[in-house]
Structures are given as structure tokens and as C-alpha cells.
Image (cartoon, rainbow, N blue to C red; front, side):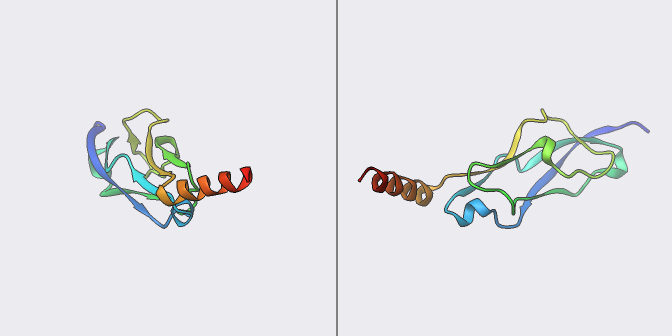
Length: 101
């Protein structure tokens, strides 16, 4: 048998530390192209985002993949990221203003 190309779902689990601090979780890809043997196609690839702080991200090379499965995208491609949200930006601006005073 030869390895085939398929698409599988990407889902996130956990609550990112950066979200608790006011950031927003952005999932860039909800589907990922994978190469594997026909019987090894994962139903989904789960990304644990619990340890992501503000401005942290998970790239393709940081994914936990089942044995024999590879993602057909550049290893530095971002799959999910925590970006500064409105609350975090407002708090940051207040802190800067307070530091200037």
C-alpha cells in the first residue's frame, strides 16, 4: 500500500493562559492536509493550547501527530495563536500611561 493524501480536522483543547490574561485565541487552520497510510487517517488532530501565553503560537512542527502521519504544510506555518485582545491592549495602554505619569 502507498501513503495517501487526506484532510483531517484540527481542534483545540484547554484554555490558553494568554486568553485568561485578556488575549484572543485564533485558530488559523481548522483542517489540515495529511499524508499517511489509508488506515491511519486520524479523525482529528487535537492541539492543547493550555500553555500558550500572549503572543504564543503552535506551528505545524509543534503538533503531536500519530505515528506515520505527517502534515503537508511548512513546519513553521502557524496553526493557532493567542493574540492580544482589546482588554489586554487597553490594560497595556493604561500601564504605559501610568509609567509616564
